[in-house]
Image (cartoon, rainbow, N blue to C red):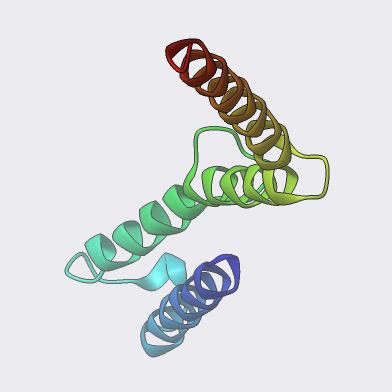
Length: 104
């Protein structure tokens, strides 16, 4: 997803650059083209960077890092599985004791 957002960012920059070239530079944009330039700049700011909190790329990167950490050996998924395994073992032991008491 980060690669895709980088491609979107690159494409927006190229569109903005092409718009500026079409009109001879940002300072020479006619009033009708200024909203397009402003919109592109707004989208670029919204995409942001991985180091800008509260922005799209920052959030996507945080999710990727969190998932990588959680699924790494010894990570949260392994800890959760270990806890579930312990609960299951405890329940199985309790069932076995209950069954043996009923047999009497």
